[in-house]
Every structure is written in C-alpha cells, then in structure tokens.
Image (tube, rainbow, N blue to C red):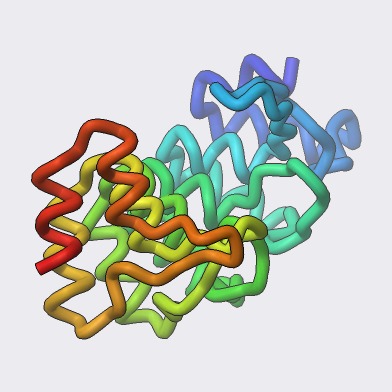
Length: 193
C-alpha cells in the first residue's frame, strides 16, 4: 500500500501508514529500474519523491527520519534525482535539512543536472557551493557530460564561469572529441573556441 500512497503523492496516507507502524523502514528500496547502460538503479522513497518532484512527500519523509545522503552502490541519491529533473525546490529542501549537495560521489548532482540539461539547477548548485571541478569514476568532467548530450547552453555557461572545457581524461578522451563522436559538431566547435 505504501507504494500506491507514494505514487499518488498522498502525504496524509504516508504519515498515517508510518504512524501505524506499518511502514517504518523509510530507506528501503521502493523502486528498481535499469538505465540505458544496463545499470540497475535502486530508489528509496525519498529519491523516488525527488525524481518525481513531490516536494510535500520529500518534506514529510525527511520529517519522519528518511536519510538524505545515504550512498550505496547503484542507489539513487535524492540530491542526484532532484538535480536530474531540475527540481530546484527539492534541492533547496534537501539543503535546508542538512543534505550536503556537494557530497563526494560519482556522479554528483552537478553531473546529473548537466547531463539532463537543467541549467537553472546547475546554477543553483554552483551558487550553493558545489564544485564544477568534480569528475566521475571515468574522469569525466561536467563539460564531458554537457558535450555528450549537446547542451551548448551549459558549455557556454561553463565558459562564462571560466571553467576548462577540453580537459583530457586518463584515457585521452576530451569533451570536444566526445561531442564529435556523438555528431554534435557545433558543440565541439564551441568547446574548442
């Protein structure tokens, strides 16, 4: 029943179920999905609510004791999910309740916002103190993520912020080369200028 309440954005039902003792393990996996790379992701209730921009449910789950930063392999972090859907209100709520939006991890909320092309969320994260120097486990920078998805507006913003745009990874991959491989020639040209 808790999944139905979660999917319906039913804060009253969630609170009643929690108060009755029937749903006390707030950090349990409630949703499992596979991404385009074949990686299975596990969502706790808070990450699910963040990915669906359910601010009321997020606030309730945090109030009831859900963990905002618990990182487990292939578990979707609420901050990453909020950044990936451009949910600035969710990011604000997480930050206001003590979540470290610039926590170490791979990828970070900055990567998620960039990959999805959510420039306002990226700006919010930077304004909140998140570093643009972060790299993922493959040494990819924020510019790599923007280049892969042809997010020229983000490349331009990174340039305006003075960020290096064409950094090599350990295996020699640069954002411009990745943009070219994806057929994003205008993006590659923007990176090289």
